[in-house]
Every structure is written in C-alpha cells, then in structure tokens.
Length: 531
Image (cartoon, rainbow, N blue to C red; front, side, top):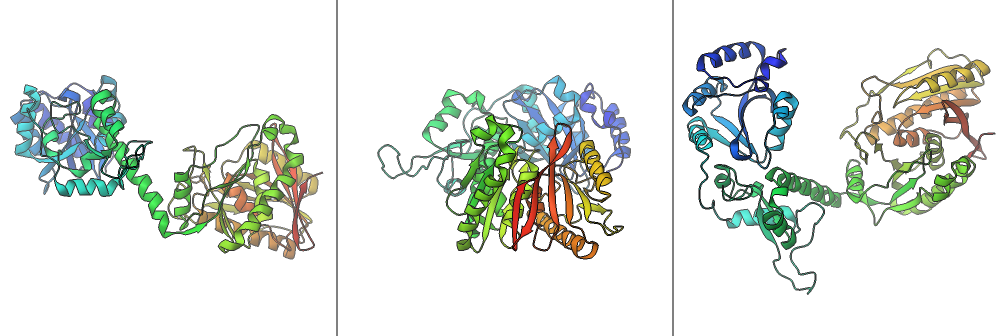
C-alpha cells in the first residue's frame, strides 16, 4: 500500500458524502493515495449506521459514509469495485449500535468489521440495491428462513463432538446426566436468528444464514433457553460466533494431541517477591506440548505450588532454595526414565533459582521448560516456528586468559542495575564482560519464543562455558541474567562437566547480589548458596 493521509482515507469520521460530484472528487483523490482489492459494507443493530470499507489483503485501508439514494449508492460502489471483482461483502454487527466515538477512530471501525466476520454474506451489486432500500424502509420480513437440512445438522454435530458449545459448559449431549438415559439431548441454535424479527435478526442475512452450519451452535437445554428466552439481548450474534470459534479451536487442539507421544508434565512454582503465579490450564498445557509433538500423560504433577511459608517468609527462600531445587529434580529424574527421559516442565520463580533448576536437571535428558508469556498472562509459546538469529554476542572474540569472566545475558531487558552490578564485579576481579543481548526487535518476555530457540541457546552457552575453561583458563563465571522463566531453565541446562564454577546473581533492591553457586564435584553438578 502507498503512503496515505489517514484523515482523508478515514472519511467515515466526517459528515457523509451527500452528492455524486463530491464522491467522484473523493474517489479520484483516494485512488492517488491507496490501493485496495475488495469492498465491504458494514451496518449495525437496526441498520442505523452504514459504512463503506475498502480493504487490501483483508485489512481495512479506508472508510467513508454516503448520504445518497440507493441507486446513487450503487453507482458509487460500482466505481470503486476493483477490476475483476463482482461481489461486495455485507456485514452486520448485530446487537451493537455504532457510536460517534467509534467513527472517530479508524482502528475502532476496523475492529468492528472483524468482529462481524461471521455475520456476513457476499452480494452482487444489483442485490445490494434491494438491501439498501430495505434499510431505508426499515422493513422486516415476516416468517423464518430455511429449516435445518440433514447435511447441516450432521455438520454441526460433527463440529461439536456431541458437546455443548457454550463457553465454559462442554456438557455431553448424548445422555441425560440425571437419569443416565442415552439419547439426543441437544438443541441447535442460530447465531443470527432465522427470522429478521427475532432477537438476533438481521435484514436479509437471517434468511441467507438460516441453514448455514457456520451460523449454528449445538447447545444444552439450559444454554439454549438462556440465549433465546432468558437473556437474548446479552448474547449478540458476534458473541455466539466467537464462542463457537473458541470451542472449535480448543476441542481440536486437545484432540490433535492424541497424535502425539504422551509424556509426564511437571509444575514447579515458587513465589517471586511474595507474588505467585497460577499453574497452566489443561488447554494451555495441550497448546504448549502440541508445538513439540507431545501430549500430557495423566495429570500434571505439581511438585511445588507457591508454598505459604515461602510467601509469608521471603527472607528464608534463599536458605531453602538449594534443597527445594534438589527435591524437585530428584522426583523428576526418578520418574522420566519410563518415558525415554522426555518431560515438560512448567517452572516459575526467581531467575537464579530457575537457572539452578536447569543445571541440576542437566542436558542429557529432554526435560523441556515451558514459557509463562507475560504479554498474554498465560503459559504459551508465541511463535509456531523457531526464529534462530535472536541475539548478539559481544566480548567473546576479544577475551584474554583470566580466572574470572562476567557473562551478562539480557533477553527480556537490559536494566541499569544489571549493567552496573556486573561492572562492579568486572572491575573488582579484572574480569572481561561477555554480553549476550537479544536483538532490539526480539527483546522482551518472548525473546525465546519457541522451544527450539531455547535448545539452541543451551547448546551455544554449553560451547561458550567449555571454551572459557579449556582455552582461557577461566575458573569462575559471574552470571548476570535478565530472562524469561523458560530461558532461565534453558540457560541452566547448558551447565555440564568440565565447565567453570558459576556464581548466579539475582536482582535485589536496585542492584544484583550473588545468590547461588554451581560447581562440579565428583562428576556431579552441585548447587549451593553463595557465601
């Protein structure tokens, strides 16, 4: 798309165009500013507001309003219809009245257009003229659209897996829970009512979508009564469409997992500054594991769940942390051998503790940490594919031999407290600083946005640790980290035999203090409090 003048392309924020001459002038200027490949018409409850939208690759790029007769409006639409296109999409945001403040903001109109995507139909130009006349006359047809055909019923039953699609219900509908009797206890319900005069009726769309499977939900008796007889106005068509879409996504995500290998799933949750985090839901677990072609075996095994003692007495957390970590690791290692040493780990807590957890778990198994994605407040991986080139490494190629080195890993941010604290240690130990920093476009909680990127980070750090000891004589690494929960575990998993000791620093009242120490003794990783 070419550069455009947003105020001009969003004409809908101004008074409607009220003459053909004015429209032709607007059209000429618009063609100089933007490109589009489709045209849409948006109306609201009762068709009180009509907005024309121009879209490019399904993204709204311009909006305008017309105050013209139906036949004049059709002439205008004919002028802006892209060459080779015959249809114009009509959408209605049923149950919502477009407000003046919506018209003022381009993104608001775009959002309403997206919300109404399931209350839509494609019209030829001559069909639209009759629709516009119906808008002006405010006429509503009497009667209902087509009854459900057998093919439609079978499609909706298949999509629902015989369960209620209402959000949070999921009741099985082929038996009665009270009597235990098998049978059909389901109800088919329209998003857009089959009658234009119904609670969710839309001019002309009621008839066109009456037998369309995309416009129909399968519901239990309770929720069928709720949306049709008890609180119909509380459940507009756009909300019911969103429910159906959400149900299909969740159901298919869970069932897709049946193709994947089952593995045990563990949760290790420690408070951070007395703040707690919730364990993942079943759908969050399924979504995280589907990315790596696994599914959960049995139920999630919660090894630590924000124990009250750690919340109420944060001053003791570091004294207890090595023991807490070791207990969790021992339980995981003992149980995963029957699963070819595969497991998923939902771990959250102080960054240094998570690094220690990863180090004791080691890298000889396939215990994969999962991300608590701060942007959405859920356990999920924000990307379906690995990105690869996520960070830059500075200082490694210019090292001199020394017993100490400082490594700064800044993936979610690079705060001043980390920079200053690491410089103090660098000056005190005459230690050079190696910085591993997420690229600007990736910096944030999702810097490691796919498990494979985490594995690559582990492998790279493992190589760096080995080189530091074998080629530069480094005995101690001072590790300063600002990273997500999953990245912290991946960092810890890089630690191995024949690596230097690692002192792990963590944030504390505006600076960073040494918290834990990693050391190899008798061919085994040992974790202790730093003293």
